[in-house]
Length: 205
Image (tube, rainbow, N blue to C red):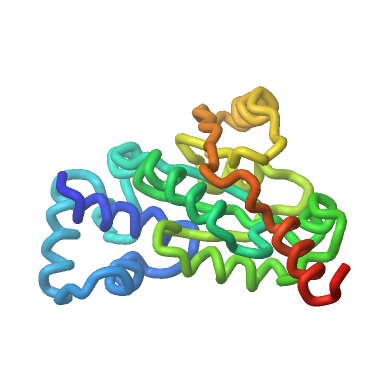
């Protein structure tokens, strides 16, 4: 299986959650003729990676990719986010990012987010390393985990989640995951600091 087959399988996985068609996702990324794309999908169907209905992955197809799940507020996208998400994507084939709801973001940041959850999702979705961005479920992080069924959950250097809490919660819903704690080369860059420094520069406080 080559890198292009992985792209097709990734698109089918993303489509299973987003509701889009896999072919639309692929064409958004790559300029391909319809004929060539259909030939490659036929090849993957023949080899048991895609179901005969050409709408979903088989178990073999799902198991052929590594799915990475990351999460956060992402109210102000900054270089630390970019580095962390690139590092998360490097751990597997598919990067799914869960965006905190507005209520969760307010609890985490002790303030109302500057951007609502739909806008924050769209901003993260526009990043090249992100395959899918979704808004999380209020009050239960494991609902998103159950939906995505990741192989790896990537935690940022400043995320306070306890790794044992996550692995135990995943086991309760029948999902076996690895936890990756990512490091930032610029840990001093945080959204809260950017907002604070901006306020000082504008208002002189």
